[in-house]
Amino acid sequence: MNTLSKVFLLGSLSVASTLVFANDYLPMTAEDSKSFSNNLNTEVVETYGRGWKKYTTYMGRSNQWVWSSDSSSQVFWFNDNGETELLVDFNAPVGTQYNVAIDDCTTAATIADKDYSVSTTAGQFNGAVQLTFNGQCPDAGLAEAVFAPGVGLVAYAYQSIAGPVMVELTQAKVAGVTFPMFHGISVTSEMPSGRILTNQQDSVAAYLTLENHSNSVETFQFNSGQTFDIEILDVNGNRVNLWSANKRFTMALQTIELQPGATHRFGGEIDLVDFAGNTLDVGSYVIRVMITGSNHPQASAFSPVQYVVSAPLYIDNISTTR
Image (cartoon, rainbow, N blue to C red; front, side, top):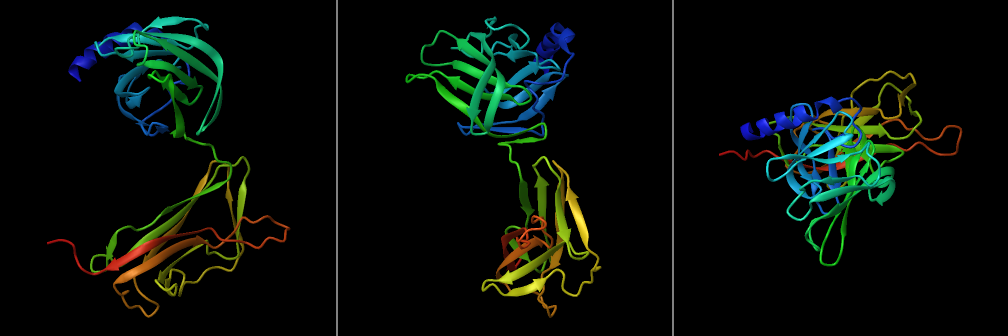
């Protein structure tokens, strides 16, 4: 990193005056991720100074360093010669060309369109900027790249003998937004995995999380103070334990309002015993966590239906350590 530090310091000083806007075209942080159709994932694995980010892959290049201003209006590329070159200034007009050594075959980038639309598996992106590339190899190197505001790189193409091959964004999480965008309630779970050794632990945890991806409040109605339950079933579907057994709950009705973008986590721990208090026998079981309320439409003929998640539960009592 010492050699890079000197180059980065010089590069950062040369463009420091551009640090002024909100980050639009390279918004990814260490918490974000992208997946593309060539099975390559893009993540930020290292940062340096105020503007440098190291990506696992970027436009097909592995472990690529890229610098951007706070607005990401100016983006610099760290090439194989240890030099920082201006890849693009997104504020420049259509037709502006940049001499930049992306790789051995790609030596120039041009702003081809600033109101470009592209449809990918991750969604439809409008008002994007399209860069086209030129170089000395007719069947290798980059052909184009598409950057969407607030999302960043959403597609790129590389040259091949058969012509340009497009690589598109398939899914991503950027700045707290998930793509493809889903308008509804998503359900995720946290369940035990692998063998559970009853001589090492006497309970397991199971959780169900609801997230509201819609633009309206989702209201869940509950008939008592109980909001969830957990059960363990044997291989024949017989219930052998229930979290709420022998518990008391208030009988007052209650509601939980899930605001747009909000999440709510339900669940807890259940003991690995049967209703008589005996430790569960070695074997295969199913653990199930559910919410006891519903968000079914009010004043309708619909019956309430629970949100439920199940998973295998493998119980043993033999230690794997030697």
